[in-house]
Image (cartoon, rainbow, N blue to C red):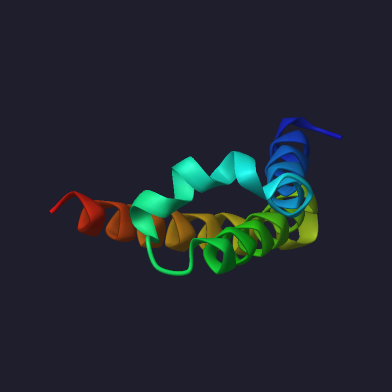
Length: 84
């Protein structure tokens, strides 16, 4: 597996960690998603798992990186809302 495959696998592993140890992600998630934080931990975990798996596979890598860009922008927007 090349570097991009490892990057994707790592992101997918972090996504799975949202389900295995969700309390770790509460401090990170509650700022951007103060309402129903537990739900958003699961949504973010599912998103990161799917995006990571897409990046890990060469056939879906471009789609995975497009998804990563959209997901990152969406997280940034929600994080910025919590600041202002």
